[in-house]
Image: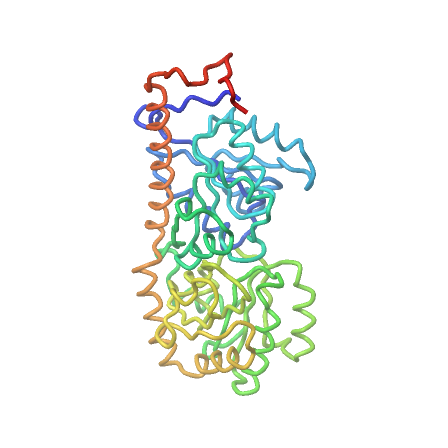
Amino acid sequence: MQRRKITPIENRGPLRIMFLVTSMPVGGAETLLVNLIRCMDRNRFAPELCCMKDLGPLGEEMKQEVPTFQRMLSGKYDLRVVPRLTELFRMRQIDAIVTVGAGDKMFWGRLCAYLAGVPVIASAIHSTGWPDSINWLNRRLTSITDRFIGVAEPHGKHLVEVEGFPAEKVTVIPNGIDTYRFVANSATRQKVRAEWGIADDTVVAGIVAALRPEKDHALFLKAAARVVERLPRTHFVIVGDGPERTAIETLRDDLGLTDHVSLLGSRSDIPELLSGMDCFVLTSKNEASPVSILEAMSTSLPVVAPRVGSIPDAIDDGVNGLLVEASNLEQTAEAMIAVMQGSKLRAEMGSEARSKVLRYGSLDAMVGGYQDLISGVYRQKTQKAAQVATKPATSGAIVPGRSKVGAS
């Protein structure tokens, strides 16, 4: 197969980066990608977006800013995806592809990038379990993948020790959020609470997560029921949508929480909604480095979260939040009560939370990490290509049209 000639980075102009996802609904990982694309240095990079299925709300938004493509895969066994994606990468002269998440996009994206001669092939993984568990088929393409991107040091370790990727191919780029956008605002707080129909002195705990089984909203609701027994002037907000919505609504009503829990669905005004809360709760069974926690911390909210993934790296137990064992109802409820009943504790933890995000979770650091990785690998490829081109031929070399005697 004829490989594409790689132009030295000094002569290439802005590198064309194609980010490949399934779709772009309103979610943590998707918002992270939007911020990454928007903040890349346009003098050095020209980002593009490809959705294997539909664009989704955030994809439609990005359509106004960068070249976008969609509907590459009509079904799981649609092999026509190969010529579609391969031709797209060639037509757009893509220099680097970054698949975001596991599954079909990770497999077809890397395979077609290889077939199209894309110089840099990388996969960004955002969690340690479903939907980002890596199947055997995706592992088969490890040799053609330049980098696997983890979102925290424990996650990087997981990619090596559990998923089995070579350590030299794993790079950790911590998630980062826009700390200027996610900031507490008293005027916004009053406006949002008026929309919710609750008083200013009502203590609100919120969760922002897709309504999927692994996020364990049932635990959130059961813990909320225990909180209400002790602290009646409390309210709970669930932001997100997904397949578990009906089950969550039913459980809410069965627990007698109809007047205490608001399901807001999928929203794009997350900074405003966080301003209306007093604390943030996450009840996931597994995570890598959840963006929602960083956004809440940036908004000066104390966080109650499980000890999974890299969450303990973000949450200093007792300082900017409280850590509990995953799926432990007793611990989750008690932690929520401790935070929700103490206004002084919330203020102190909230201040510490924002301070930590400002130090370790900036958007600039994340964008810089991706830019350095992509340009660095591209430069290595061009240097290697140049060395091969200038290396003198030897008598034992295999040249086009000939085969080495005894070769198998």
